[in-house]
Length: 281
Image 1: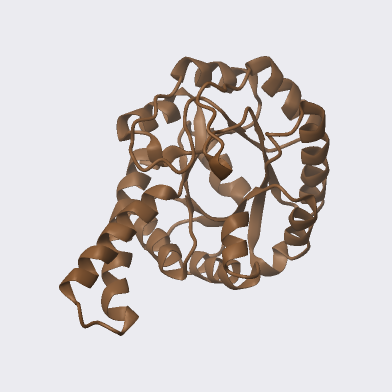
Image 2: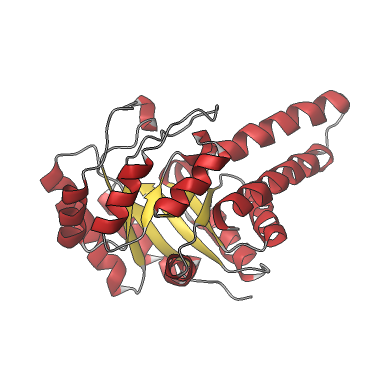
């Protein structure tokens, strides 16, 4: 297949009331595992690279270009998304190279700022994205867990969400409904009634961040209630790190990374396929 756009992948899912799994990756092995896993499940998806992952890689091009090439060769539709940008200059730098790097959308996140600042900055990024034919995602109601912030009581108000989308022109809206980033246990409790109210009030697809901490049944129920894009990142690290520990324990003399990364990639692939079926099956 050819590289898909976020508009195509999420738009098609929204039209049929389904969800799209959106997997955050840090390494090429994780990106390969995502493409293989969603292909196993037969579920279109997004390959995501966050601002923090770009910083870890010392530049935006290497990992994004790898994601672009992997998505081009996938058996299902995959789009590339840049996640959780909070620096307007970096957001515009990403947009300036989006066509080259195969980026189909980006998220600009100033949800921790005052409403007026969040709306104004997000609107500027959204306009620039639209000028290039890309989708933009914003966030209203801080999702806890980023940078040590944990705000379990924060919820997105439906009326404010409707106003924010009108003010900013975003194509996707990340909402705070009970999940939190970087959870390693799946104990989050989502407000399904709020998700339904937000889906009715807001004319764009809703995004659930912090989905690694949400049990499978609740993820499926969130999609049924109106979530259309489901971000997953920490879950891949949990499974992959556990597999790495097993592989190294079984191979104490290993020095060739391929000897242990193959098993890590396979374990991650299996988890991706399972989660993709939960969200988009």
